[in-house]
Length: 296
Image (cartoon, rainbow, N blue to C red; front, side, top):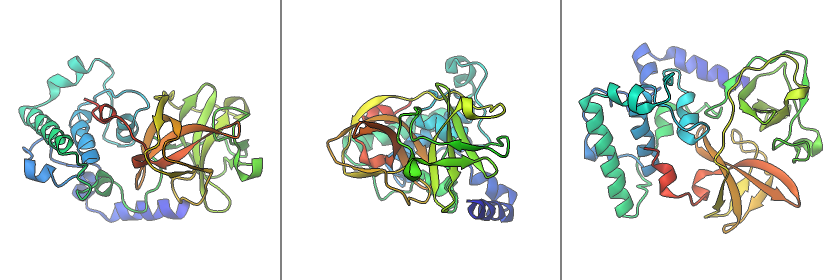
């Protein structure tokens, strides 16, 4: 993990300032230039949702906490949500006529794709524009300094009765790099590198942690969803080196949220042999309703 982060930092340092800034946006000038229908058809359907919401995120739009757009834009250094949560007052009046034009055009093209029954799979994907290939930390997770010298038990879900990796011995050493997503009912969701060089995402109980950890409260969708395709459930969405279990098309899982690194991952909850576990499956394995995609 440290090598990958070093490579990312070096790559960013070598980029000119303008290039670095542009890599932080899907369409860097969508606030100053009218987009065209042809160029929008150059993106896949999922990416258009992010392009649409990027217009509003520039002006501090407050997304639903814990949902995929919130996770994604919260990881962008340029995004600062407005202190006033009323978007109609704090965000919408800031948009220019160019931005409103682009907002309507993106919605129109998305509607055309839905009408034609296509996700436009050969179009560009937003993650290719804003994530260097070596960046595998999930959106929504922030490198956080925890008090050193701790070895904390990690569970796949926020419960002592949940699945625990490494043959029931999964632990995070706070002397290493720990990425934090937030708190849920007295548990801290973390992402870290294991001794084997893999990565694990799981929960640490608050009572076991020494020192305060300043992180947001996680709010998940908790939506039952039927798998549209067979999928492997993993707690390692970075190196893909672990398998928690196999899930079959037609099975129902609880959809929590969507995270991104070099691909989009659905974070889900299920029970295997009576044991609670959470993990990641490719987002396209879930048959999510299009309404979830259309945040606006």
